[in-house]
Length: 397
Ligand code: NAD
Ligand code: USQ
Image 1 (cartoon, helix red, strand yellow):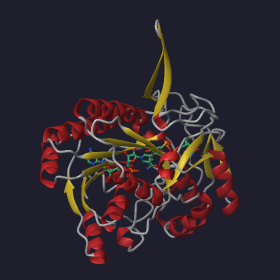
Image 2 (tube, rainbow, N blue to C red; image 1 turned 90 degrees about the vertical axis):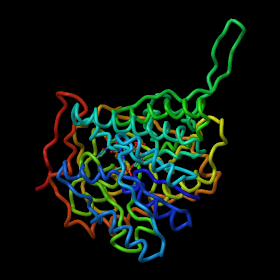
Image 3 (spheres, rainbow, N blue to C red; image 1 turned 30 degrees about the horizontal axis):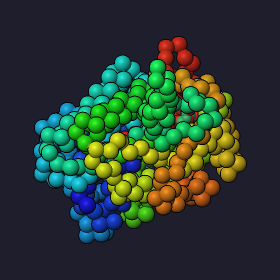
Image 4 (cartoon, rainbow, N blue to C red; image 1 turned 120 degrees about the vertical axis):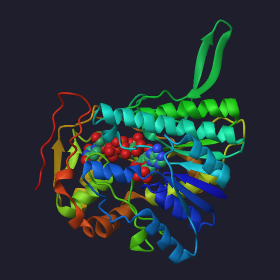
């Protein structure tokens, strides 16, 4: 299969591009390297020493003999070039990772809110409009988020995979309808993912574009079998207050002896998936696209759910590092239930990596190994969701 990986230099995109190339697919990456520029803006670097993209690709060629092409392209700002790349590479499928993905970064300022909306919504729309303009039947696999459903809206009721069956009262009786699950975003970033859903629904209905939307939980871990082949192929690992996600932050904090930074009571329940399973899920989704004319196919790309304080307790028991309960910088429910339906990937044969299997290995092989690269001043989350919220001080120097 010819696959175009948009955002293929990022945390999920890079290991996916390698995994698909290893599986024999013909892969092209398009990325504008904006994530690397945001590191420069925030004065922080991936904990792991990621190499420039052409060095990464040369290392892959050296080890496997396989060629991955790279196009430096801004999906949101260069519509004509997006169209040109689709016409030239004629992909069977596009995997779309190319968005600003950090909720805290999206809430930093009016500038980052506007950037996140402009980048994510226009990027997704450019892709869909360009696919229609090419006249090619290109399948889209998009990385969405569990956060589109929000947290706690339906209590402990199972969250379905995308669609909710509702009964609409009419004078003639009850109409049964399937609707997109109500959107309930918790940040500007998550809001862009709920807007993406509407764009996909429209283009699937109007133009028959075949779209799979993967509502992914929080990804943890770093390496996949392919990124572990050579240090030049290593995946990125974000640990800072804006881009670091909770479990990878705890792993890194434990490795350097920093107190584990639980926000609020830690009663927030979230869904998780290991990066090794992310890349497998994307391959499974590419192999099972919807038929032209069908509604958007939605999968919940999640393997486990945990409360944040339970995660902190697990990491603390394993490493002896203490837990600190900080004022929550985000506006979010202090405690929530999360009961996620995740049958579709299991039915396609996914055999998930669990936390109990991977946590110790991750702490040793990544957290401890690269501990000397950590900047302690970037660890505590400083971005508050609205004016007047308390900002926590640094805990270690
Ligand atoms: P990332 O920031 O590491 O990667 C995104 C990549 O897209 C970067 O390389 C960036 O340079 C590129 N990009 C952004 N805007 C672009 C544009 N306009 N044109 C071209 N390239 C652009 O993020 P990630 O963690 O790999 O996330 C990838 C996708 O998966 C995102 O859409 C995110 O919402 C989703 N997702 C991530 C997680 C997670 O825990 N990391 C969880 C659920 C969903
Ligand atoms: N949290 C802490 N301590 C920390 C960091 C986070 O308690 O040091 C808490 C947060 O307050 C939040 C929870 O952990 O309640 C999750 O935060 P996160 O930063 O790990 O995840 P989130 O902001 O939701 O975003 C991440 C990715 C995003 C993806 C999303 C999937 O950055 O791209 O869409 O996970 S989901 O959460 O399922 O919507």
